[in-house]
Amino acid sequence: MKRLGLLPVAVFLSILSGCAPSEPRAWDTIGAKAVCGSRIKTLLGDPDSYEFESASILETSGEYNEFGKAYIIYRAKNGFGGYVRGGAECERYEQNGVPYIKARLLEN
Image 1 (cartoon, helix red, strand yellow):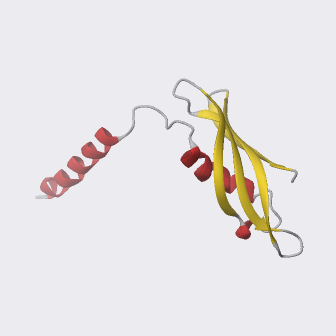
Image 2 (tube, one colour):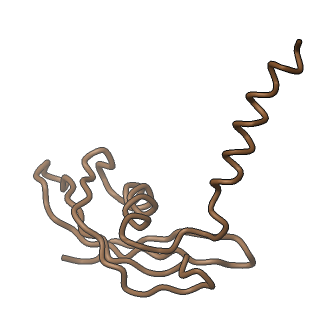
């Protein structure tokens, strides 16, 4: 009886493994928005005020174009509490087989 209870779990896991992508996700505006936002927030005085506006892909690299640079436009509170628009450059790269994300805020 217990084996029958495991059958649906085994079928579900089999279906999930068949749906898994066979190659890394390409670096695009959706990926840049998702990955860079959290990195940019760490650089802001008020991380909770971060609001994504847009992303532009500057370059891509890697076998599946899974790495590259992006320019992010965002809004966030300044030191006086007012919202201002800012820009950041974000890069996803690989070093010794390990993927990394780095970001730097750009002067307005």
